[in-house]
Image (tube, rainbow, N blue to C red):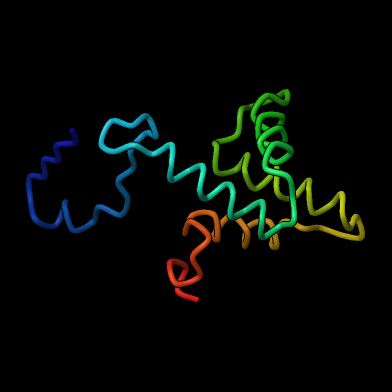
Length: 111
């Protein structure tokens, strides 16, 4: 449960983002994440297992551990670079991540 306390309406109005950990605290997130992963793999023409392995690799690489969002972008970018290593694929990977956030639904991305 999330409780917010604001001493003034202005403090609450300045609130920009509330996040919840994906631990099924409020609703079952597993099916939603699995469905988004499947749609991402389909959109990329990739294997779901391969993408998940790339995500895990990105999270376990040396140095500071990236967020799951950043790790997913890194995983998609590595897949895209493997297909076409001619240049940076960061922007394209970020676009696929935005699609993933919308569960693969273009309407959820405003497109």
